[in-house]
Image 1 (tube, rainbow, N blue to C red):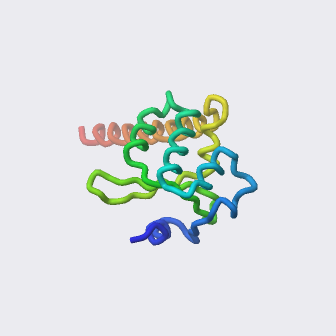
Image 2: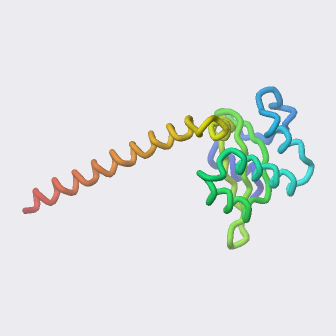
Image 3: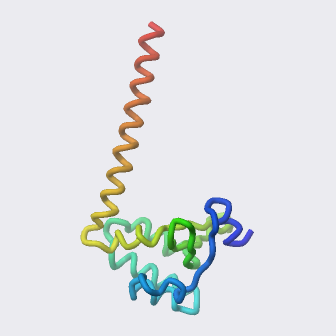
Length: 145
């Protein structure tokens, strides 16, 4: 299954785009990644961006990408522009992960404030969900006794 077939299973109207199609709002740092002709250079430049902006916080992710990332490309969907990370898995299969360009830019802001706020919001939702499950279990146990 090729990249577009795979991505179209999860998102509508996916199309691969070149840097020339979205040049106006992408930073020079990312432009340089997508202007590279070879996969190896795109991967190397992507890893260096990650290291520059979030080496301490995301060192495990960066190590994983260093070992498994084989290419990056841009897609356009109804939600906007995303970067597709193409990873080779332990069994030799290929997986694709889409990360919105907005999310990547959030990591470039001072102290990753935007991304941290999003993560905190997600953690809060999980915590509240766990509380509700725990409460339901307690209520069920009380009814049983």
